Image (cartoon, rainbow, N blue to C red; front, side, top):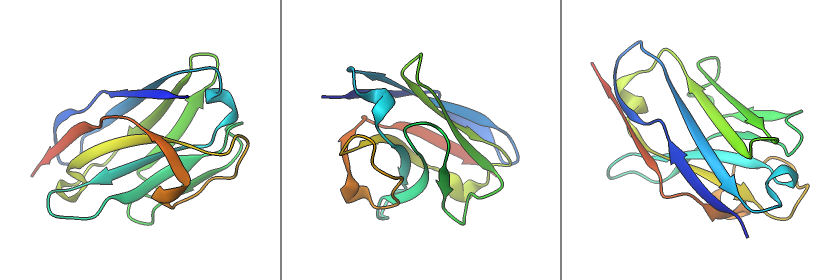
Amino acid sequence: QVQLVESGGGLVQAGGSIRLSCAASGRTFSSRAMGWFRQAPGKEREFVAAIIWSGGATSYADSVKGRFTISRDNAKNTVYLQMNSLKPEDTAVYFCAARSPAYGPVSTAAADYHYWGQGTQVTVSS
């Protein structure tokens, strides 16, 4: 089992930066690919970024490529999402998620992630 807790959300002006953290409990964090998803009001949950268990491969949605960076620290059981050059359309609740099975590849599909955090709100003002 993996429990996930996001933090770091808040209100930021357009063009600003914010870093989200996702702290995981459980012994299998370091063997799981991790993802960040987001959901804006009235919209479907969408993929943002993912990182393989070793940190050696990442994947990004086209809408955030070049602006967001996903990283992980397996010693701290934490995954991060550094968000730069934020836009009002980045406003959403951001969720981190852990993949199953262990040592699986990165995935952009929410259905491949079996453990989810409660989400943290990011609001970007224009």
